[in-house]
Length: 161
Image (cartoon, rainbow, N blue to C red; front, top):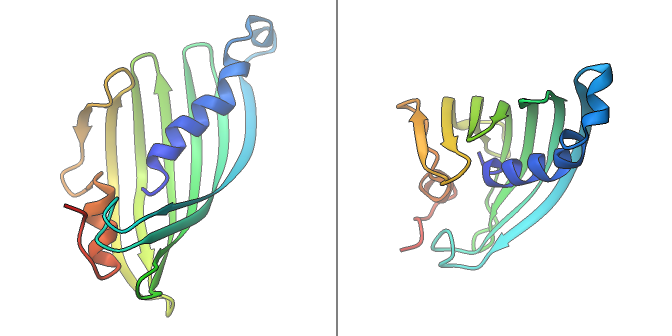
């Protein structure tokens, strides 16, 4: 889920040039594979009550149709509490469908492990978001889309106030 906000922007940014080309549709849907490496850091008080570093990689496998894009996403992130040095690794597998007006993510959205391999957070389900407003339209009850509410306690702290 760390990549949720990054994923939407990344997928749309990577795929917009292909989706906008009408000549590309003569041969059917387009298939695009890509990966995006990132390293996002947050100062104490921005997301959590401690400094947070989130380097990772998104692996995107997309099929682009005239009316929608379906992307299989693998998200690998190492979340580190920079105050304590404690790190949790995350590997998620989500299918994202982007259509006019909405973005739907389905799959394993939170899968956090300690350095010893102990599983500490698992959440799976579906979230549907309005592409226009960012409003959550549908959400599996056991899935928490609030990044800070999940990652900060898992790393030994609290969400920023």
